[in-house]
Image (cartoon, rainbow, N blue to C red; front, side, top):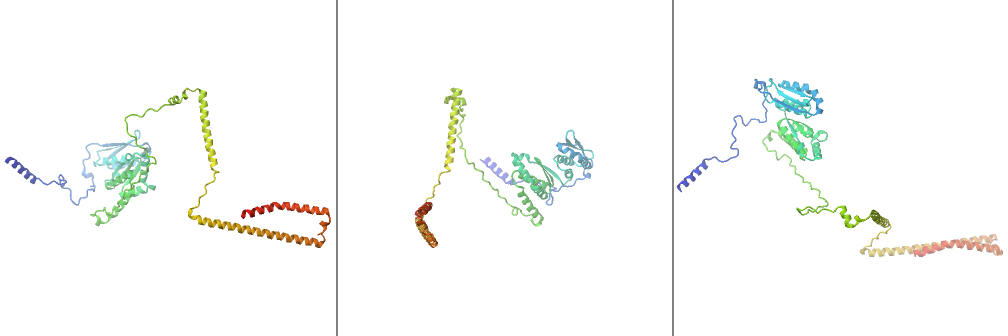
Amino acid sequence: MAGEDDRAAAGAAAEEARPPKHKGKHKKDRPWDHEGIEHWKIEPFSKEDNPTGMLEESSFATLFPKYREKYLREVWPAVTRALKEVGVSCELNLVEGSMSVRTTRKTWDPYVIIKARDLIKLLARSVPAPQALKILQDEVQCDIIKIGGLLRNKEKFVKRRQRLIGPNGSTLKALELLTECYILVQGNTVAAMGPYKGLKTARRVVEDAILNVHPIYHIKTLMIKRELAKDPAMAGENWDRFLPKFKKKNVKRHKPSKVREKKAYTPFPPPQQPSKEDLAIESGEYFLSEQAKAALKRAEQAAQQAERTEAAKRRREAAFVAPKEPKPDKGDGAAAGRSKAETCDDARAAAARLKEKQQQRQLAEAASAAAAAAARDARGEGLAPFLSLEAGGAQQQQQQQLGAADEPKKKKRRQAAAGEG
């Protein structure tokens, strides 16, 4: 018991002596690191820093497409002069379609061969030579962003790549101004040249654009950050409250009109469907002769034709069917009765007016006949018809003809008056 107590006491003492656990316990102070140091600053490297030169030769080579051959032959003298100033030799092989760079005894900068490798890589990716030669500067870096494998659908990929460029290249120009980088979209890759901070931002914007995040959101954020960076009072502040927060809008998926019912899983395959020969044997058609088959086919065609004819006849007759008249509502019974009574009164008034006009017309005819008779008597022609039998018969026959001609008109008038009454 005493031994166990001693071990427990020793363990407790060791726990007290052990330093407390904290995050970053393996992080040690660096003698060259201080509060005022700028980690993104690139220190200049001159020939005096490495007077002995390089001990080993390093080389890089890259292929270029056939359509770049003519342009590279034109600009290769300028590329050779620029690389000669930093002590790097270059070679253009038109037979193999490749470019290569290697260090020489005059090379004093150990990192310049990496810059030369990036130079030939940019030239192969359609970057203009004056722009590609800027990569030899210390403050300029390059990044090749591969976007071809981020999306499978080719049509969506082309649309989103065009969204990154924008109308007349306006979106790409805005990104270049905000990131201080040169950006070139070429095929399945995007080449960017500029400082480290700008390259980091450009890579994030390009990858998000292919993953369906519009570049305008990043452009708005970058513009706000640019304005905040101009104010020295905001250097130590948190900028999250000034940056826009865009909510993700979930678009509802289109629901199909017909939803298929999921069948229950079974390990057995579906039964084999009968073939045409099997169906013909079941119906008995397989054993018929050619003439009988032809007659059966004609009968089927005649039945189908008769059915189509009957359907066409029904469609034609449907055009002559009178439409159903709308039934009056129950609440409109009194109004309907009043309108019917008003209609009857109007008909009686019209009949009375017609009858009055007919009487006036008869009176006018009688008056005109009396005036004509008085005129004939005054001329001595009134008794001539009565003195001659032949003249009297002709006059009677003429009056009968006039009466017969007026009879249909009188009959029509009587019918009209009876209908209106």
